[in-house]
Image 1 (cartoon, rainbow, N blue to C red):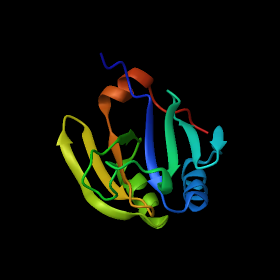
Image 2: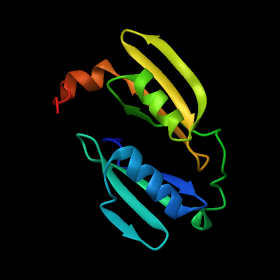
Image 3: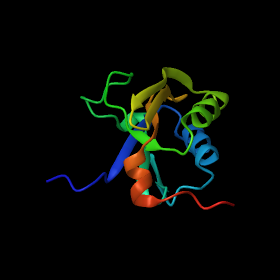
Image 4: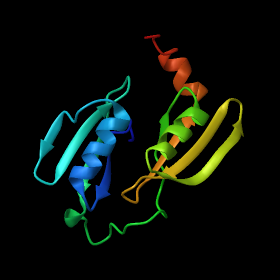
Amino acid sequence: MFRGMATINLYADDLAAARAWYTDLLHLEPYFAREGYVEFRVGDDQDELGIVDARFRGPGDTPGTGGPITYWHVDDVDAALADLLRRGATEHDHVRERGEGFRTASVVDPFGNLVGVMENPHWSSRHGSPVAG
């Protein structure tokens, strides 16, 4: 049934500010933009991250930090967490050792969305090490 993540959508009351924040964080421009929505393709698998203007929030889409957390693979959780905090995110959960090389942390972005980062040996074994640049 589930074959992989298709798109993650986050909401923002100020779409322009969210677009700028995520453009700076990801070091890339959205590949798709229209009134009330922008979308980025992120990482080796080109996973889709959409930012939706909060005025289009559905009746069941309540703001806050009680929902699921999407964890993005990073090479260094400590560095990623520090970078997110420098950019104005607030800590949701500190760095946690999960065992067998898995490490996680999460933040609340400036727009109220949960964002997780993870060192994930399974992901690394499928994708290899990053290219030095």
